[in-house]
Length: 318
Image (cartoon, rainbow, N blue to C red):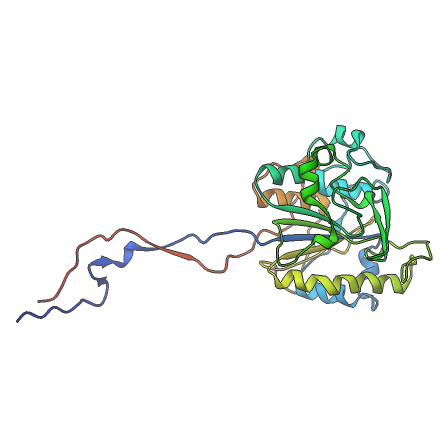
């Protein structure tokens, strides 16, 4: 009787180990969330005992120590336009209308239109906005305890978003629609005018007076209650501010080394450039010349093994 014994070693059933290859792993990016706070310099946040979460967040990720707005040209609105379109779009005041013709004449398209055309998911989440794609310039929102302001909205001032109702209604949403378990590829989050540390002169809102420790505490607590859930669902989270000078700018999540710092000069245009590079989009405006934020070094969880066709027929020992 002839006995057949399978050969164990470099040849298994006559298939060369060289026929087994490991494919390049998928590099699908994690969800990216940017949260923009208001009117505070980095020096007002770092080391501030009234902002414990934001200081803990520094240890969770990368702090960009030389991050500034794209161009120092006045109030808030320009910063939001810079993040979305790579330009202040000729607007150096906080005056804005939904589908603003003057803004759009300078900035006919945006990051949001780019993402949409590439088939990537996105959402702009505005706390206190009364409805999806709302035309409101301001709105006092009792539910969230603060005021929504169009000047902090990086989407509806552009005709390319606002004048497309299907696009705007589906993507420019009240923050109450935000679900950390169902994040799009890119989320822009703007807290209301108290929770973003902007503050108010109105006595209507609690812990919202400008330049008070209570305002720092309120904004910090808002982040502390929400950001961990985003991170737990695998997101990269980038927190920064609208303000002149050096800004608090910290990113944490997949691919971002905890407790590190980067002293490269970056701006809001660097964020835009990073998102556009992430999805192979052409850079808009001043993002063309910007050094992108290093947000795209994420690593996939597992490689995918593939097997080539066998190189030889089965062999046996006689």
